[in-house]
Amino acid sequence: MSIKETLITLPQYILPHHFLSQIMSKFTHCENNTWKNLMISQIIKFYHVNMADAQQEDINAYRSFNHFFTRALKDSVRPLTELKTGVACPADGAVSQAGQISAGDIFQAKGKSFTVTELLGGDAQRAVPFEDGLFTTIYLSPKDYHRLHMPITGTLKEMIHIPGRLFSVNGATANSVPRLFARNERVACIFDTEIGEMALVLVGAIFVSSVETVWHGVVTPPTIREVRSWKYTENAPMLEKGAEMGRFNMGSTIIVLFGKDKAQWLPEFVAGKSVQMGELIGQF
Image (cartoon, rainbow, N blue to C red; front, side, top):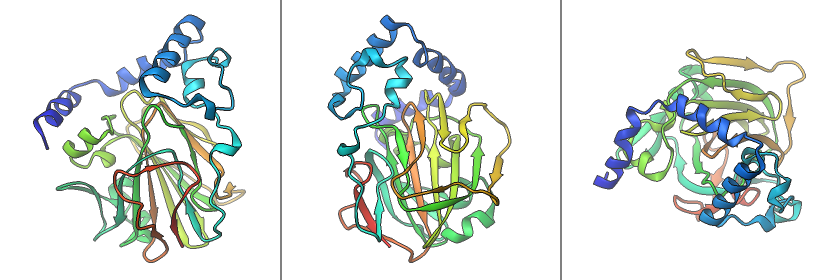
């Protein structure tokens, strides 16, 4: 951990994460044309957002900054892998880490890890299917497409909303804050698939105003103190590979978990690689 990373991270321990995120939510949902167009144009300029990919290229057509931030893309710009046994990338972004789950631990950064059990809300039984399995952590930056999609076809089994802090999830913070992804507020979605259980964990971060899923709508807020969960035993949502499953209202991180020997990542799918939703990242 460098001095620069320490200086970036230390103030975050004392910041009122949820309060700041609530304020940001009001700004990003504001429908004042002058304000929202200014915010959108600045983000496009600063992060070099490619608006040619968006279904709606005219920023005046967006109701609010958040409407722009969660914009839909043209169907042609994110082709879905056609390999039947292929694992599709769930999001645009960059690979933070990818590898094997070792003795229940998920690698975060040099000298830092967290457990599957704490990531999934503290229930050891939830973690059993992923023992010695496979994981990846994908970081979405402000320039990225912020809808999340299914890596393979699955039927929803359980959704868990886990309270926590809202540290930033950028590289500097991941290198500095122990157990970062198991400390931040998150929504874990567990699916039954043809290769066993798959978990998609949507991790919140500072200024992420909310996380939502296509079957539930907004899951967070509200801010909670205790873990809450929903089990789906009847009429459970079934989502095809490539289908939208949720979105971040502002950017963050998605973690994907598979069971032992159920899938493998492509050799080039490694930390630091830029990825796009739908592309082939592994096989089962």
